[in-house]
Length: 126
Image (cartoon, rainbow, N blue to C red; front, side, top):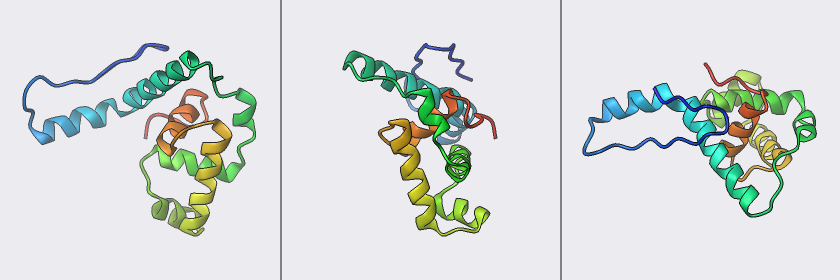
């Protein structure tokens, strides 16, 4: 597994061809650390571009439903699966996840999940 100390960025690379099953197993095992590494890299880019990091008060602005949707997205569920689990429509899930992206100052949903994980809003283990 890839282990990333706080505030360090790691890279996963392969020398030569790897069996698909082996690559999938490595990525599945290292997913939380890779997600954090991606967020750390984008945070560094933001700092170098003189953009501010996400503010902690922004995370407090998430509604319970937004927190739930981003937590389920962090577990790898798709919009339809999140909707079915919560008894809401996929368009409603999309609305909540778009709000999370905006409130956390993220570029994408994956980036929002990484920020939420770093802020402790979602767990990084299934």
